[in-house]
Amino acid sequence: MTESATFAAGCFWGVEERFRKLPGVLDAEVGYTGGWKPDPTYHDVCTDKTGHAEAVRVRYDPEVISYEQLVAAFFAMHDPTTINRQGPDVGTQYRSAIFAETPEQEATARAVLERLQADRDGKRRIVTEVVPAATFWRAEEYHQRYNERHHRAWFAI
Image 1 (cartoon, rainbow, N blue to C red):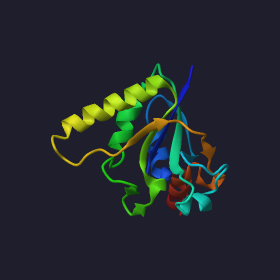
Image 2: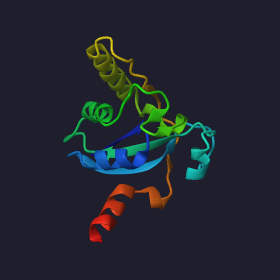
Image 3: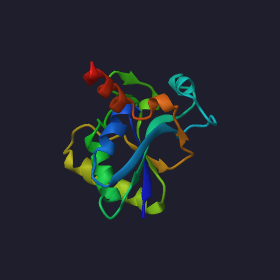
Image 4: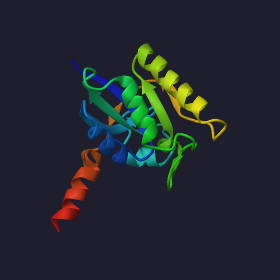
């Protein structure tokens, strides 16, 4: 049995690569979600006018890795305290968001977020959105496994 989960944590290339390395993650694909434009392209999303976030949809085996563990990994792989920004990437397409696919996922994501916020002891507030999943539009093929393909090419030189 497999389940899926969708996360946005800035530029999707590194996020996809990190999720792929987790035991129990069977596949990850990059795409766009959370906006209003149907079937957006990368060019569309980069305008910051579609409402979409660059996101990663993860397919995983819940017998090996739990949704709670995926959420914890998500928070560890980016800065959830910056609004519409990760590193040099700025815009709503780079926001921190969890797109809950079920009420159980939403409850788990909110519980993990609240626990992490309580542990911050007055430090900057976590701004990650926890919202119901919207249509996930798979990104163009050249974005899929981007880091994996480009790192291989680099080492082959």
